[in-house]
Amino acid sequence: MAAPSIDIVLASFNGERFIEQQINSIQSSLNYQTLVRRILVVDDGSSDSTPSIVTKLMQTDSRIELHGNPGPAHGAMANFAFGLSLTRAPYVMLCDQDDVWHPSKIDKSYKAIVDSDVNRVALPRLVFTDKRIVDESLNELYPSFFDFRNISRQWHSSIEQLMQQNVASGCTMMLNRPLIELAMPIPNNAFMHDWWLVLVAKLKGEVIFIDEPLMDYRQHGNNTIGAQNYSWRYLATHMTHHLDKFACYLWKSADQAAELNQRFSNSQIEQSAFANLRRYAYFPRLWLFAKGKLRQHSWKGQAALFVTLLRNNKRI
Image (cartoon, rainbow, N blue to C red):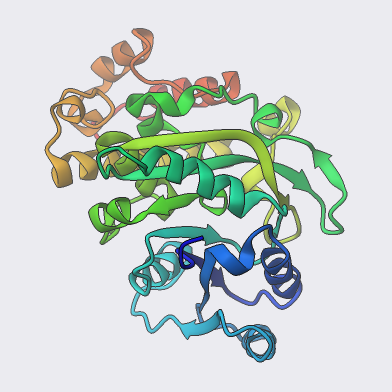
């Protein structure tokens, strides 16, 4: 087998509760020794024992490295972007500090992306997977994130849909080198690093979905937003708060789509209603919704989108 070709970028911040278990799950992965070059732990200024835990693990595994994010930008997107700047590996996986990887995650992701790379043009490629949702103690809450959120397995097949709603979680991704070289640097107008990466891959290369949960996505006090599915009753009680959040989400994702067009000058994006959403006045935006040009993958999302467009009666 060829020399190890995968770097894992693990972003950390005050992750002392779970980071050792996460790194242990990576080390226990199938073909870890032959496939993984480095685990790059990129810390964003932890004030707990996260750095000392990683330093301890480094003593028994030379693949582990600890890097501090020097800034000036901080937060998840900036931290992952800094981690990506540290690697020159042919393939890179992104990793959160509080999940647990299944033994086959690395191996299956690697085979999927290598099978696509072999004997073909070196296109930018991204592989992502489903994930199992668990509680703090790793008890299963939902066997599939896609089933839980009622997400179409084909949503990622359309760049127009991907611009409006991301379904590829960074913690499930593997990227190839051509994608990293093309997508970096991640622009300030990106909504989030993983969303930007999958958009670039879809626009300029290939996105591959493994329809299998290959990791446990842990839900705890600081990490519940990614897998919540609010009831209608809850949403009605907190409607104003959630509509304000959705409006922020909508316009920021539209700005990201416009940034994608500016970076790559693609005719498909130039003609996209969503990428040009800020240029439309009030009634044309409602007409775009009526024609199905603006959409979310769930009925709740569609309802929030419609009410948000109704509320925003001025050109933004």
